[in-house]
Length: 338
Image (cartoon, rainbow, N blue to C red):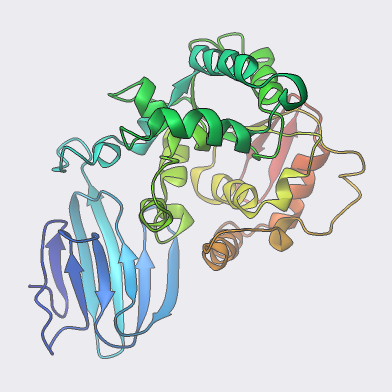
């Protein structure tokens, strides 16, 4: 039973009584649910904090594959959720839920496997359909390959997972083949290097509601951020089709790597013409087609406050950086090293 000011493990079940303000349902969707209107304050180990209002019956928090202890402190109008530890190695999960049994930092794909995927793309997309973007590759190659196993493409290829070295930030409307070529030309060890790339790392065949729970309540709790913290660096792959920072997820990834992960950011590829002069619909004004827009904007705002930085300035630096630049995060700025 979970009540006022107590601790519970990830396997705990709370009986929904009048004394409780929230419940823990690990055997259901693994979420904390509000039993009455309340304020939720969440604190994560990297210093991230967030405060939100939740109404009775609404999902308060989804703790992604957590093993260890979450502390729940509550009073009449609020609960405070604090992550005090996670042990991924001893995680007890159902065998059918393969994705949750493998740490997100191991949802990696090698350069050699990217090349093999590119070969499949060349064979499948011919004539007028040649040179597809990532959306087309996901729909016509990755989803059909993964549908029966209910896993991501990376885990399909590497059932036990592969520890990632480089987190890749990019936008799906780019040319897939140009995307792979840019990465291949940048790294001398491309074939053996292990990359965390969203279209390969995340399970693309999952229903939207289940995928949303996997992605987490906040961007800093998502597999993106968990993997980013473990990777040695981020690689930003720009494209000439469309400004990648018109996509809110790309903006959020930049905010998280600067404020929390604090890893060097390698910048390659070219931006669309006049991207450096245009400031409309990028940064905080970027687009997000999913229901997580408010969550991403909140994450960006918290990152700016936490690191005392301006996301618009960071976006501008990445847009104008020469291909091959390395942006090294410091306490309040990004220092561009050629």
